[in-house]
Image 1 (cartoon, protein in one colour):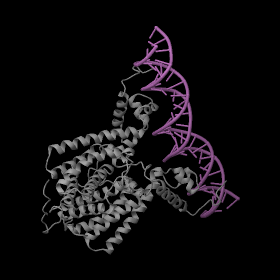
Image 2: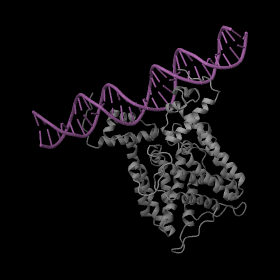
Image 3: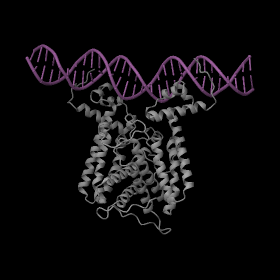
Image 4: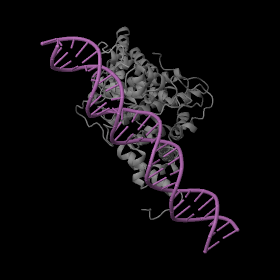
Length: 226
Length: 226
DNA sequence: TTGCCAACCTATCACTGATTGGCTATCACC
DNA sequence: GGTGATAGCCAATCAGTGATAGGTTGGCAA
């Protein structure tokens, strides 16, 4: 009862595990896949997985990092092909949403976390350098991709200060919000998807334009206070 | 080894269970609380929980519905006290975000779902009447609260057509996006919270204003196409 | 040939949510 | 005062989860 080939090339088993996991995730949803199912799909015992990955989460994390690396490359190609910053923001936002809808499990793992182990209640970021990439590789990969937004926003706003960070994070929040809701609540009676995406992207454009610096060095007129 | 009082008033045990669960959720995060912990906190055996609730999720669902009912009431009070629709939108959005940050576990359960049992891959809402409230009481409660947004938007836009739905859902997406990110990624180096909230709310205002109907019956000028 | 080592397997652990079957205090009814 | 029904409870147990321990095997380098 021994496997015919006992010593596959190094790294191949690892790749087989990742492929099997990816397929099972897509079929049943990441949360409904067990280590035993992955092992069976590969043709090895469940404990053998731990020779290649330190934990079950590590498998998901690696798939997540790979998926977002692909998105990052897509972003870079877009920025290289399109030079108008407004168009760039639109393309990036749209690609981001589409990516989330095409890879809902990877998006979930990166941006809709359920693991709160490392997040005690009331804990928030207090400033300074916290190496979240080490504890959350999925988030880090996703953010590396999204950081492509910064350049176009700087160009559109004509500024490169901390307000750009606020704008980028707000735009990110809106795009993430739509993506995560569409993923998480597929049965909800959503408006036509294209119109929704258009509206969310328009929100981002409006924010960027409202905070553009008209005269160099002069703060832009703020939106009328509510 | 019998309990001193064997027959507490009907419904009291149920309430004790909900209170204990709520406290444990706040202490350790909803995902890190087991049925045995809840039972121990109440002082009963773990199987006894199932005499009051059909499943562990049902406990969380009920807490969720109650929390959002409180938010709904808060919304209604705000709408009654403030008449300016622009101010109303601002107050509702801000209260929504604050609610999510104050009750992260309830917000998670309602809007950051991990249960994908009822959502096969690629499945999306196809229109028509789907009774999502029956399968997702948390979502239903959250949406009843958020539906308060519709009125102010109708007033601000001077229209009551399907575009209002698009606008409301887009605004909801942006507010939800910020809320869920702040909850899910507390360690991320966020910009100053108040500025972030202000930016997201401003995005909503800008969208509402850009789609306002200026002349009755005449479509508003669209944003310049990207 | 020898020795090492990575990959593997069987057996098992602690823990999860959930079910079963029996016990008992209480209450409505006679 | 019985008497049966029932709601609430508990011990025992189930299947399934991720993870660990320890022994075994094949292949490669010295």
